[in-house]
Amino acid sequence: MSGTVMPPTSAIKSAGTLLEDAIERLIGAWAGCRTLGEYEAEVEAFNLLKLIIRHVESVVALSARDLVLLPSAMVVARAAYEATVRLLWMVDPDDPFQREVRWLAHLQTEERYYMNMAKQLARFGSGEAERKRAVAIGQIRSEIENKLPEGHVTLKQLPNLYQMLESLGEARKYMMYVIASQFAHATHEAVGLYRKNLGTARVIGEYIAPEDWAICFAMSWYSLHASGERFLERAGGNPRDFLSAEFGGRVQAAINALGRER
Image (cartoon, rainbow, N blue to C red; front, side):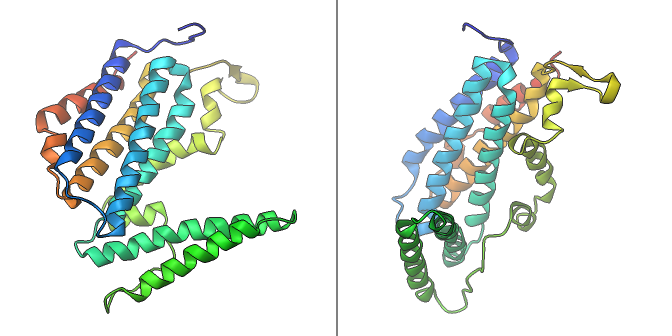
C-alpha cells in the first residue's frame, strides 16, 4: 500500500477479519428468517441492519488501509452505533403495532427532511418537488396512523439517542456515542490527535496509536452483534446461527487486545 503512514498491526488485522467473519455469519443467518412484509417496522429494521453492516465493513476497510484514518473510522462507527440504537428502539416492544408506532416516528424524519429541504430551496426559487414529496409521505403516514388499533398513540417526534438508550435500559452506553461524536463535529478534543499540550507548550504532530482503535472496533462490534441478534429474534431467525458463545468470545477477546497494544 503506497503512501501508508501507519500500517495496521497484526492485532488490528485479526480483529478486522473476525468482524468480516461475523458479517458473513449474520448474512447466512438471514436464510432462517420468515418472509418480511407484514409489518413496516420489521422491513425497516432489515434496511437499518444492512446500513449497519456497510458501516462496519467501512471501519474494517479503513483500518486495513492506514491507522491514521482513525478519525474517519470513528465517524463511521458513530453512524453504525446510531443506526443500531434506532433499530433496537424500534423493534423493542413486544406488541407489533407498538413497533409500527415507532416506525411511523422514524418515517416522519424523512417527511421533515423533505420539508426542510423545500424551505431552504425556496430561497433560491425551487423546492417544489421536495415539498410535494414531504406532503405525499405525510399523507401515507396519516393513513397508516388512522388504521392503528385503538389504544396505540402515535409519537409527536422521534426521541433523541439518549432517550432511546434510556428506554432500553442502556443509558450508560451513551458515553461511547459522545466520544465518537467529537470526530463527527470536529471539536477541539478530536483535533487533539494532532497536538500535544496547549499554549507555549504546544507540539504539533500526528499522535495516533494502534490502541486508539479499540473503542472504534468496540462500537462496531456492539453495533453488529446487538442489531443482528435482535433482528433475528424479531424476524423469526435463530440468533445462534449468527453468534455462538465461542465465536462471540473470540471477537471480544480480539477487540480487548487492541486496547493493550503499544
